Image (tube, rainbow, N blue to C red):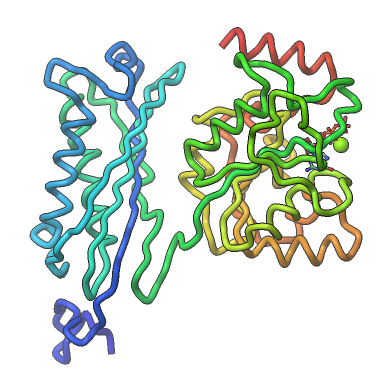
Length: 352
Ligand SMILES: Nc1nc2c(ncn2[C@@H]2O[C@H](COP(=O)(O)OP(=O)(O)OP(=O)(O)O)[C@@H](O)[C@H]2O)c(=O)[nH]1
Ligand SMILES: [Mg+2]
């Protein structure tokens, strides 16, 4: 029998009286898209309109909503909230302004706070809409979802996210190290390290041993290949072996177009019940292993493929259960290999 229906088939609040108290945490996220008219109102990480500071107001509204979830959702238990934190990020794009909201809630009780985090992030998103609607009603709220929950029977998002920037190649076709090429005012591997650091608990470069000694990359945390350096698979497998209880966001150092906006779909849609979440190739639709999030399941899959002599990560992913998503732009996962590619990409990113 379902615990949310009683013996007369009437709905009821689930009886949690006998459950053990534990520390519970949940994180929910939402994405809001605003038309370009809002771009002019951005001031650092805030949107300042006549009506007031949009994100600050959204955070206050969302926090109040978290505390009052049981009043809005009929069968929710009222819970003492011990922490409620919002993270907001503004992302100006050429044709729109994106806002990414995250709401993290904690309690110590007999049931979890997933509804609280979802309610909080939804009301915060609606508050953004309310603050902004005088300027335009062409506002889309999307991808409201639970990212993580822990402390109860079912756990979601149980692994932290780590980042890996693959730099261990020989750049033979380029003739100089692709990790040191500069598009945004610093060696590209360093740029990617900082980009991933915004979303990952820890980030490492993946390299051949001693590769970066005496270079500007020497001070960044690095995982040296613990297998013969035979291509990106060596770096990926080293990372999976070194930290096997984390999700790995892996990117190659030769992706000049990678930025926050291109990572959002991965961050927003990745799943832990698959080997990897990745973009598919824009035309040929095979999984792109060098801009992907791997779960701990990937370790066994890569070990088996490696032992069988496979060295191509695309082929490994083609045989595995992956969550493939469409890249937002064909250049998202475009990599560069030759000096001509570099000149071309440099021109593109400078023109943006
Ligand atoms: N850790 C590690 N990374 C590698 C290795 N080989 C390639 N990579 C990385 O994997 C990504 C894709 O590699 P390739 O496009 O083949 O780059 P490459 O091998 O440097 O270039 P070529 O020498 O021209 O083939 C890049 O980020 C490389 O730095 C390796 O043996 N170990
Ligand atoms: Mg290579």
